[in-house]
Image (cartoon, rainbow, N blue to C red; front, top):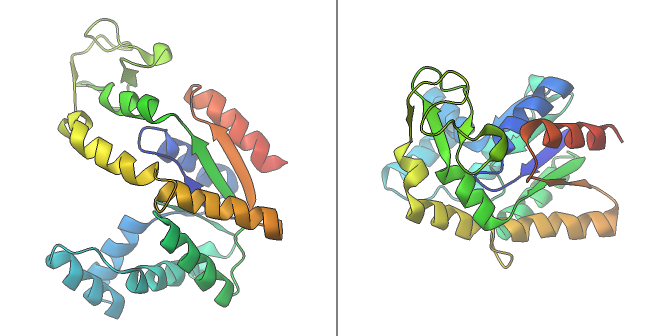
Length: 226
């Protein structure tokens, strides 16, 4: 099963992606990892990408998409894959669709985690880390995992915040790209929805990102099994 996974920062997409990987036994592929692996291995594409990165420039799609295709053709992807973090905009979606078709790779499913922009922002800024165990979930904006005052809801430990979780400007910038329905990530999602309506593939799975992790997982697994 070959899957694209969309969702804004704060939606819990990473958590749900890990559950899909475990259930289906397919690799969870992230573009950031692909860049690092190519640069570390000194591949031709990696060398080209490093040049752009060292200059503080965005790596062009003409380099990124071939890297992704090379990864999707590796042996561990024979039974499927879950691609996360790409495409980020409409142009990338169009180019990726073209490249996959030229390579004879059929995209089966697009998962779209739907979450209001303000809710997503609150979830990011509301995260609290337990000094005793970062795996203890605490969030001041989520009732199910709300801390006990200023203490961890699980162990009573002290809580702290990550500086990037409190960088409102950076969060707004990322969300500005994601929620843009003209050229941004939501435009890419809509591209696949239009494609599905015309060609019957890929299958579109819409998830309500508002409930808790377990409820969202249950809905996702049920829809994957349909």
